[in-house]
Length: 239
Image (cartoon, rainbow, N blue to C red; front, top):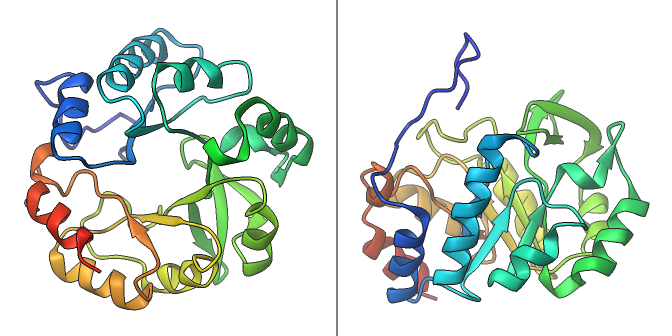
């Protein structure tokens, strides 16, 4: 995360590499985990992250999704390495709006069944707006039922981080979960942000009407948090 002085503050730095966690997820048969390249595309740091991401995908072929700097010209390498899906956000927005030309180009390169659209958002003027560029830039596209309906024909799943609560371990954004539950009748939707207790998971299940999936990062004991990874798997496997 970025602090007020714009320096990078790490919540947790693992002594293990990415393939270690991939093998752990594979052993637990935990599918659809996220491998995210956080560094800016084109930098040396991004290249180092890319090598780690590819190694993780090789370690658990078909079990992980990958995102960060994904474009039509590089998506195939991640899919060939074993990613079940690629996760894309910034590439499909231009000047604050959805660029349907780019989205169509991406669709041709990847295929709808292997594409996840990241529609992570922040609240402004009582509406949720999709944010890009590592969540620092607001688009002019509000996250509405209409937007979700339009985009659902282009992808296999939505990933939505509630950026205002992400990483704060302060609870979920219930209003956003309720909004997502409506579109989740038609297409899988995964929510992220604020989950730090099993009470949060119970509330998410209730507000999401058992239709909204969840991804958890720093709250897991694997990554320095207090939530048991194995217990989370047990909870999420229940109907």
